[in-house]
Amino acid sequence: MDNPGVFDFPPITRLHQDRTRRIHTILSPGTEPKPSGLGQAADYCLAHHVLEGAERAARTGERATFDRYTANPHADAATDSTPTVLGPRIVVAPALTDLPRSPISETPYYVLGPDTEQAPIPLRTLAAGAFATAELTGFGTLLATHAVVVVLLRTKQPGQRLDSWTITRLPGTVFLDHIDDPTVLARDLIHEAGHNWLNDALTATGTKIDDRATFHSPWKQSARPAFGFLHACWAFPLTMLYTAKVLEHAEGDMRGFLTAYLDQQRGHLATTATDHPRALRLLGDEGLRERLAAVHRQALTL
Image (cartoon, rainbow, N blue to C red; front, side, top):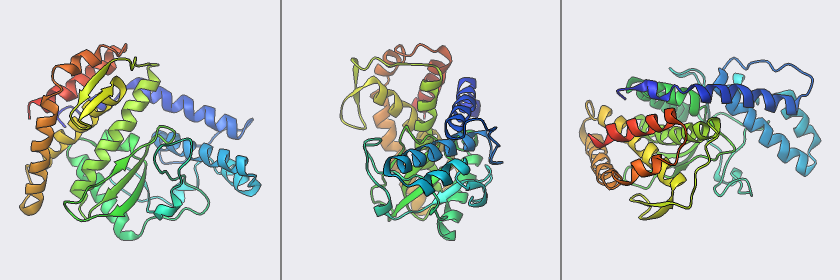
């Protein structure tokens, strides 16, 4: 990433501080929240896990679980974290049956709780390697603040479809399939952290996007509302910039895999060159527009 400073966005920092403080006040009124020691972005992410867990426990009448959440505003993450070059991360690998669906999300999700266990050592090692690769290619700031909890899902083989996603109610958390290669995992971490970043940026700037306007998405092969179109035109270019960097040193089958991915994304992104400036005009915050435009513009040059 030639300009990692693009991820430094003061409104997001203020959002993290304010939202974390408000959640702690809701869960433990009259008390002064103590930092987890994992950093402000981690406290923000973990506060949302605790809020979701406490709400669910309250709805189902699980008083002991509710008390555990309110007494542990950081979900005990400080003692269950994986060291990485970006600081401690929480890496888990729950069974798919432990990922419920509910009205809060169209996709399965996972909330840290009293029974949470760390992922097996090989998966934590894989994740730590992915964070190191992302840091070396200029994406450390993005992942440090928007990929705090990593939920590793299905183990796949190279060439198989890798699904990944985020949900807005658990910012800083990413859900990913994976293969046994940190270079590919880093790519997908960057993609999903990019979605988390943009969601926070839109919230922090109070941006409401008029979704009556639609734009053709080459990734979905359909007309998409501006919100989804802008998300794609941010997250995929980030992975393109990352892939171009790691290709400088990739060898063998991995080089072929990454080259094919970058070629595919070049074709997709080129078709958005006209519509992207039009979609950006729907955003009222100049700083946000500039960041999205800069990344899109840089990726088009690859």
